[in-house]
Image (cartoon, rainbow, N blue to C red):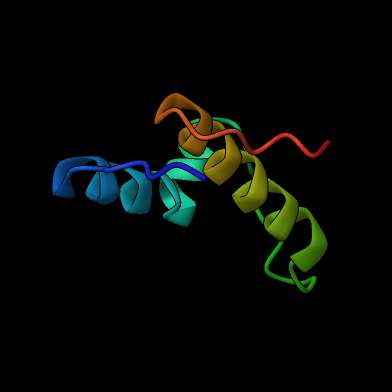
Length: 65
């Protein structure tokens, strides 16, 4: 086991990157049709992808074995 220490600035950057407008701006989520409910599975997959990438950048090993 190992610990990964993150700074407040890194934590804020992760939270900012998970805001829907920022996910749209980075091309992770397409514009949602106001007439249709959002695809929550797609949004969850996007959040999971962004968080896993961020954790890897911090030095975490998040790949399943």
